[in-house]
Length: 281
Image (cartoon, rainbow, N blue to C red):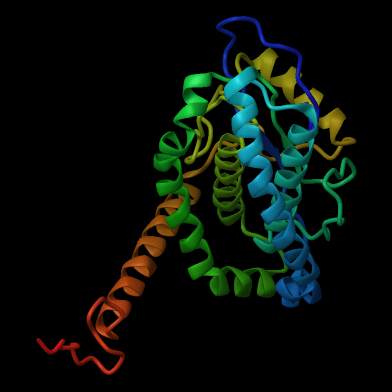
């Protein structure tokens, strides 16, 4: 099932279906578009700012609807899944995973980056406590994303010089983006499946060899023969190490920011010059 479509109702106790992210294998990238990558995406950032505000209100409406009916109404589901797909296509371009400018559209079936989510029935109790339940996933995602962008200049230089993304960097970045997709889908009530797979998939994640071949064939057909390099997404050791580097860099950046804020006097009772305010009694 692709973005914005209802899935067939799942039978009771059916295995959960995690949202999937399909990205083609890394290929040559134009150095000119790599050089101006973020500048070229500025129009998308502007549009997505307003869509983000709309998605925030839509998520609140979806929460109330899911709490009452255990499903997200189709119009809200289509908008939120389309918003998730749009942001993912822009993120994939910004993170140098593809060299294909994303369209200004909620749904882009011709684009090589695809998000597949399942409109399965939700658990009302999990919906009620969704804000609390999502905290562990956000704690993992936030520093990893921060770490990727903290070292973003390094990745940009590597791709600019080589003209393509190294395989370990592709795998690690794709795993991070997929986890972000799964977290976003869970937060917006698009799936009951809790975010998993930060360190990729284990071998055989799609089932037996025959089941995996059938799934790969289905995805390849849906993608118009381009195929997906992320289903399954089995990481090599270098990619796993890079994910750890993302996390550590993000944590270090957060700690550095907190320390800088403290030492510059950004705390209650302290003036910008560093002198503590004394109140006359």
